Amino acid sequence: MVNLSVRKDEAGLSRRRIDPSSGGLSTRDRGIRSRRRISGLVAISLAVLLSVSAGAWADQLAAIKAAGVLRAAVFDSNPPFGLVDEQTHDIVGYDIDFANAFAKALGVKLELVATNPANRIPLIQSGKADLIVADITITSERAKVIDFSTPYFVSGQQLLVPVGSSDKVEDYATSRFGAVKGTTEEQAIKILFPKAKVISYDDIPLAFAALRAGTVQAITQDSSILAGLLDRAPDKAKYKILPKLLTREEIGIGVKKDEKAVLDSINGILVSLEKDGTAAKIYDKWFGSGTKTPQPRTFTIAAPKE
Amino acid sequence: MGLSFDWKGVMTGEPLRWLASGLVTTCAVTVCAGILATVLAVVFVALRISSNPLAKYSAMGAISAFRNTPLLVQLLFWYFAAYGTLPPGARLWIMDDHPWALLPGGVTILTPEFIASTWGLGVFSAAFIAEEIRSGLLAVPSGQREAAASQGLGPWTILRRVLLPQAIGNAFEPVVGQYLNLMKLSSLACSIGLAEITYQVRQVESYNSHALEAFAVGTVLYLGLALVLERILNLAKPGRFAAKPGRFAAKPRLFAAKPRQLPKRPKRDGSKESSHAV
Image (cartoon, rainbow over the protein chains, first blue to last red):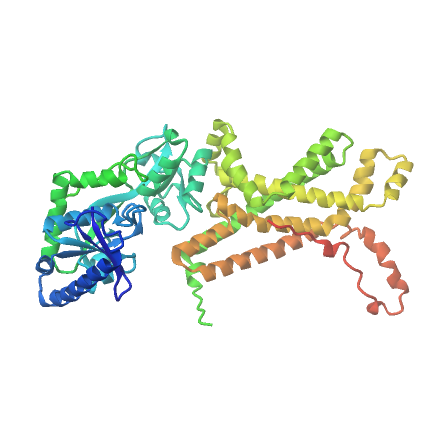
């Protein structure tokens, strides 16, 4: 298990340090306050040391190894990528498991920096974190300010159709689609199938109700949303999700721009995690059958194309 | 205020086309549902005033159900629940291409959304219109009926020639209000995917974030439609050409010393224009 220390730093970010070497949750006793204070002091001095050293060393990878701590910006309220465990109060999730694997491979401790979508990029730009491991979609816009690793999670727009319908996406070119008002999926399907009719509803359950009533022939949304929707449906045997991704949304590790050594090492670790089966195991833990968001793994992590 | 308007984002290109087709859809659904409501209202009134208790009470039950539940819920029911019970053949036929059902602006009136909206709005409005007409009937003095009966007229002729014309005269303004309500309530059909004005306004909003401009244009469209619809419906006002009640009412003016100072004759039932919560 892990040893937790929580404190608020100057930026108001709550950090949790995870020390894999210490045993169990024994700190949750009466001595927790003083220990927290001490580890808080350690963390502050470490942070000061790191911010000084990050400036001094040009190579961030060397800085991480020298400090012995990898700081990863993660979400704490975006299940299943990052969430606070109800029992242990640790941040856990798909992203956190990957962050742990990186720290283990680099031979350093892991420090989680809880963040939100808007703060992710500023955190690594200002040197407050080394990596973004926070469900961050790779976009050309973002790639101008940070570097991305090879994708470690791929989702995309899919179709949910009655079980007797065609498996070929092309057969739906003139169909009636149910979509959610104001979503990128609604726009994408109009571009993809100009001859189709797109009926937009307020939310995805209403679109599903329209599919049940037979007023639309397919509904479209992000794969994770469709998977969750179908899983909760009492009549899920009557519907299926077509495996083909109409659009691809790739999620990568965000690295500070031009830190080639860090980027290469993260890419290397990702590929080796895929090879030894760890990546698939982590996927199964958060997206396998029996989880709240089951969906088949439609991707493998590959070395980046250059 | 710091408000800035960019009408180009709404009044050109794609958004303009959307809004235009929304206007066509709103007009189409108003006309179709209005006709349906008129026919159903007559049926409701006939059943409601019939002496057959089964007809009377089933009409009472239906009117009560449609008047006392939210229209949005009714529309969701017709579209998401009732539509699915149609035979599959009928549903497939509806989904086919029908060139005859195509209106300008790419609006087709043979879609599940249009059918459910027309039906939902028509039935809902029919219940209100039926009750307006019935109250108009109740306002006709019983002497009218007795006098007509004493002339040897049959019950159907009495209703058609004596009672209904007066009842419609009594209830005219509230009934016009119901048709205007029908047009405005068609905006609720955007939640069942009918691409009318409100739906298109929201589409423009999510397309280029011109919320203020889009909603302003939508409001103006509804206002314009309501004014036009009111004018058209008032053409059908009883006595507008024949001036049946008017010619009696106008008489005292002949004897008035200063006709202009006479208080204006209050509009018949004008203040009673009913409205209902949705």
